[in-house]
Image (cartoon, rainbow, N blue to C red; front, top):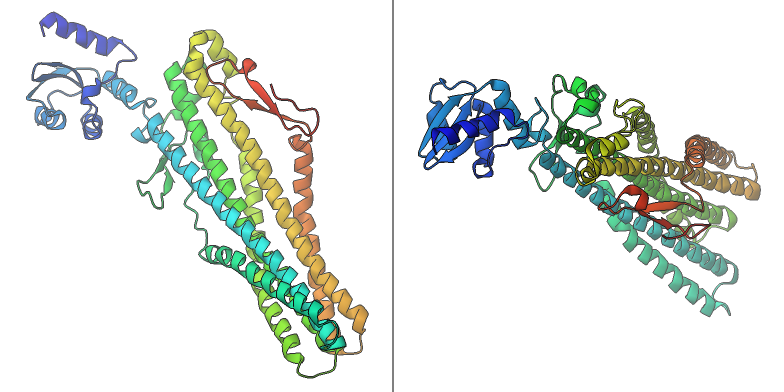
Length: 496
């Protein structure tokens, strides 16, 4: 390479704002060494690498360059530090001053791990739903056996024996099948659900950088330290290059993915609580049947079955109701997360002023930008819309948990009132027990309504839970106004 070629290469590196380190020099270790030593390779001249360095007189710099690049020799030229930093930032695809973890590739890796976490949580909730279905089958089997015991106590082994045998077989089948459905959910639930996702950091605003560990089995996420000057850079959106805008939009999508994952964790914990409350309702019903049989019939050999029902129901009720306080704690965390999400900055209004960012990008840089910066903005806006739906799903999950409180409370009130109505208040001990059931049930009903009513109000105000609504079918190769629409088919929806 002649001196004129060398001059042109150095000129291109210093003046071209988009200049990057050539791909042949971009191994992960080499890039780390470049950032640490503040030098960048510009070109190769045979076995010699041409290097631009902020401090060419630094001791052992040439040896460090040769070791990092595997070159025979290094020819080093003095270059302004800001030029070297700009080239490194372009190469690592980060805004000036940001760490390597802020590159779009690293952020995409973080979002992939977050998506994997949400998939795991979805499977966790499905298993819990299967467990609640199993508890419903268990209650059905108990109902069959209750009818059987009443028939045996009233009629004995008489003409109704074939029907009683059918009730026995059906009841045992439903109980056994319900237990088989419930046990996997119980095992998964008792292992716990440790969170590996940090809460959003309000101090970082919309310039925070989230990183993830390399542990494939159980990744850990953490926020990096705030980047000095990042907020001012973000506020000057109109002066940023398209590449810098894409980098900030990648930060937005990562923050939105983190919020969706955090909300999915809260929904999973509330699903776990609803499963426990379903077990509590089952236990209350079983114990109520046992109590009624003890008080209704004369004492005898059948008391074994009656007291067995009472003991089984008490154990189930105590274990199930033990989820009440954890569910309340999660409800408070859910409310705090939703309030925090409402206060987060939106990619729709990124300090741009009255003009919409999408229109500014498209009009200022031409239609070809739709495949780069415009596409990144569309993805970010769609991610924000997914977060709006995730917040609504979390509100509705909170409402379902409140309804689980109400159902559990109604179950307790029904058992207490039934025992009082049937047996009266002659026995003081049983009367106190029945009144305690009534009081506990009323508390659960009131608390459940306190959870459900705000969630129902949010659902009505959202406008998303209507019979007739449409979803966009995105085609990123075309402008948004040409995308198709898919309707629900419940009202006036249609597919385009």
